[in-house]
Each structure stands twice: as structure tokens, then as C-alpha cells.
Length: 236
Length: 124
Image (cartoon, rainbow over all chains, first blue to last red; front, side, top):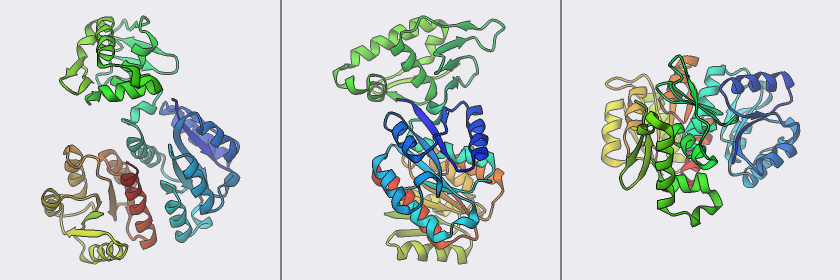
């Protein structure tokens, strides 16, 4: 399932500025033209929404309450110019389900940090929201949109790795996203096999990892088995 | 719901304790980061509200220690501080804060933000 950042703002320029900001951070961003369209999109994707109070249907805390009850997978940051809302209103929106309140002229670095903090809670790691994932040593680049992997990026001749199956690609993306952390077999089952996870056994996962290691060549050694738990990617 | 509060300023600390206690939270308060850490280790907590500028161990150091410890890694933490510069806020979030509120603060907002963090715990 995709992870998307939606921006719903009355001020088109602000929406476009934030669109550029988050796109630069390699996040998948959409600007729906109404709350209704955002809700439609949220039915088939997880994500985070930056929604302006008053914009396109989110006028009262009860609207927030309704949205939160329909889309518990969507983290919502509401925003408004400071002179348009008072503290009591902000509190009511937060209590009705909003996760945060910001003002439109928030420092962009703070905005990025804030959204990362929210994502840490929503996803196993922040980087899973990214379309481009780079290993800590900078030597591997994985593009989730183009579905490409480059190895040896730091060398003069990077190589494209194009022989992974879709499942192997997703497993590698999840491991790379969670570099240095243990990715449990259960998480792999849920994230990769999704609704079919109940039909997948441990041996299937281990077999995929084995093949993946082989196809990754030298980099394959970076996938460590954590006995009894799962796997961890640790670049050399 | 147990809340750990760390602030070296008596006035602010008392105010935060009063607001949270009145709202029904079980509050433990300490006047510096080191004492707060010791209290956390001894008694645990569900959520923390931390000042930054404190003697012995500042709020960012305490936050770093919390995030590095398996027992408290997932505990929601709200930084409540006079340090309002963007760099400070970024440092707070990057160190692992879940929310960042600057002093002077509005009691309704503090309470609402603590409730947002509490909601995340209850959702799990």
C-alpha cells in the first residue's frame, strides 16, 4: 500500500510550496482539490494529511472527528493562520483527532522534522515513506517508483541490479529502509505478503532472503540473520 | 497514565504538574535530567514532558538516553522549553521528540497535546 502525503490548502501557492518541499525530500505528495477527494484517495493508501482549518469542509472539530473515525490510518496535521483560530479551537481540533497544529509560515526544517516525528509513529521507519532509499554508506540506491536498484554508487561505475523479482525487491526495500534494525519475519509477512500473509511460512521468507543475498553479490553479506527474530541490513 | 515531568524551573514545573494532575494524570516530577532518568528507571512512565535547559543532564541528553533504551524507546515525549529557535526544534525532533512546545505555553494546548500522545499509546 502506498504512503502518501496529502496537502489540502485554500492557498494554492502554499500547497505548491509544500509540495516542492516534500517532493525534494523524495516523498510521494498529492494535492487533492477537496476533502472528499482526499478521503477517496485515503481509502486505498496510508498517509499523512496537512489540512487547513476551514478549507474544503474541515471547518469544525466535529468534521475532524468524522474524518479521524473514517481514516484512522491517516495522520492529520491541521494548520491555520494564528489570527484565525484561538487556543480553545486548536485544542478542540486536537482532541477531535488531529495529531498536530502548525501555522503556514512554520520554518520548513521544523515542518520536515515534525512530519518525520509523526511518521516514526506510523511506519516502522520514516524512510519507508521515501521513494528513494539510500544505504547509510551511500553505496546502494533503491528507487521505489522506478523500481530500480543501483549498487556501487560511490564507485566510478555503479551497476544496475535488475534481476530481482517483485517480492525480492520489496523485501530488500524494507530491509534497507530499516537499516541497522531488526525486521522481524512477522513484519516481512505482513508488509510483503499482506492479506496472503497467513498462507506464508517461515521457510518461504528464508528462501527469498537466501536468493536475495545471492543476487546482491557482495552486498548480500550485509543482510544479517538475527537468530529467532528475523533479518537486519547493515552496510559495511 | 503515568507522566514524568522534568523541569528545573520551580514555577513551570509546579504549573505543569498542576495542569496534568487536575486532568487525572499520575505525575512524577523532577528538577533535572539525571534525577528524571533515575526516577524513570525506578518507576517507569507512560509519557514524558521534558524541559531542555536543565543542570546535570539537559533535556536533549535525557531524550537521547530514553530513545537509546529498549525499555523506553517507544514512550511518547513532549519537549516543553523556552528554546524556540528552529535549530532547537529540529534538534528535538531529530533526537526523538514526538512533540515540541515552547514556553510560555497555554495550558489548554499543553493538555491537548499530551492527550494526542496519550491517544497514540491507547491506539497501540
